[in-house]
Image (cartoon, rainbow, N blue to C red; front, side, top):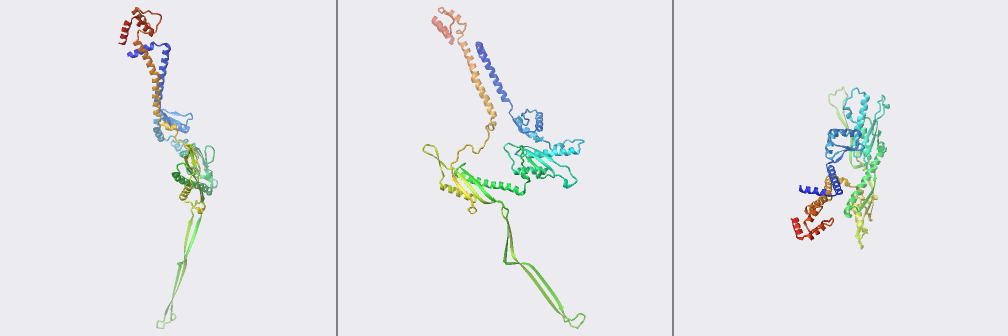
Length: 506
């Protein structure tokens, strides 16, 4: 308490300008500390759902407000953010309630029964529900950001030849940097066609957000479809061979010091061979025919001679047909057989420091290139008889940083996990700076003033006048500072001044 009283007394002894500056500094320090405390206790919001439709966003906000959880919504109304510690819990709870639904309505439209609904309204609701369910299924694909499905079901006709087939159109919005390959386009069209009775995949139109038709290949002939698959098959073989060769060479010459390109010519003709073999040495019985005939000869019928004078005759014929042994072999040759291979291998050279200390390029020797070529030949099934070609060249590579164009995790993503620690570290650093640069100098200055008051109460202000009266030889000559007053007292009476100093020191 005495120290505080001394500081207060020292503060009162300051000039008004100094008092004002200290008051402003104290207020700013208090405001800074309060702002830091508010910033520390502020909730860290994270994205709960993004790319929401207006219907889903409204339902999700209602559910969050019912739970009395703070939330934020973006200016576009498609992103909802909540405190980071509530994200996982809310996602599970809302998923159990069927949110988000992905836009549109599904078969839940029939959960609420409407009295007096006509057959037309029921058919319309069924079509809306079917479109919504198909859109939700399509939205589940990794490449799809949003989709809408439109189905046209014609009226039934009394005559079969006049009955029109259903049609459908699908509009998809792809995620940034994503695209659909032909197999995915075909899968979406068949999905929609299988979900609508009587709908053929050829009658499904697929569009992207830019209006480009993606389902051109659906109505193509079988030959045209095979052409697309053949190109993919050829590129797959070339890529597989190039990857195997490059991974093998990089273990020898070093990572990033070999480039391999493979061009393959494939035979996609479907060929069948039928072979018949005959073996005349081992004939085979084809058919066999036997005929037997028996006759009796003697007296005419009805006349009896008293003796049995009869004879029995037997006649047999046998016909045997033979067939030459035959073997029939039917062989279907594989489709996509490699006809020729062209392989180009480019390897980096060697680098050694010259007399100036700089790296100098040295091409690889012919012997080393021949060894690499022989290694590639044996690893790829090289066949010179069918016209395969291979070229191995050594050239200097240009050093380019980040040539793969790989973009790793951004610095914001890396710092996201350390954000709470960084926040508290910044608060501690700012508080330390405020204490060292503001509070400590303020206390130190007030302490010096208070110490001066305690040690020299007679040397400041008006108390100097009575002290001069105690020294007969001392005379005041106008206002004097502490040093001049001390000299005057010491010159007037040295003994009494020494006693005075002794009392001060005590």
